[in-house]
Image (cartoon, rainbow, N blue to C red):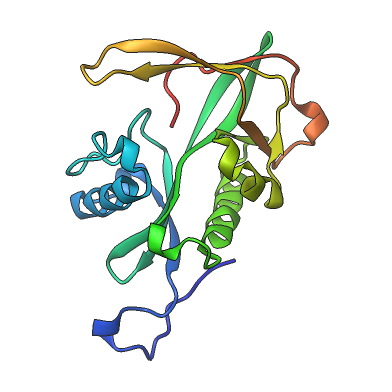
Length: 200
């Protein structure tokens, strides 16, 4: 689903519908980073100490950003990066997805459906066999309704940074989901996940 702005809407009212774009990280401007940062800080208030100024990421910087804007305001966002993760003893290429956010005042309006549809398109465009993300139990149903499949009884290990920049190993026993794109679900290897670095 792609939302398009109403061309007849007055400029000072902003567009009726947000417009989705997919932007390479290297094409973002300082203003873009600041607008994304503001949205992520609102969407993830417990992490707002990470999202300050133009720092629009908390872990690994994405390769692509899926962004929805209403006028100059970013109202939805997801980051994607191609990378290999170790699953069991297999190095598996994935499109790592993170920082999936819809502006709190627009949650429940269908904007999240448009966001995940655009993420699907971006994953297909990158040519990866699977999307991979970790999320809390409260929103897993939302992802499942949009084709993401849970990895049951799988532990994921990744590096997280502390406030002073030190890296710590984190092990997460639940919340891992994949989105088959260029491969069938059955092609996903068995075993726990090792990111060997930070998540998006």
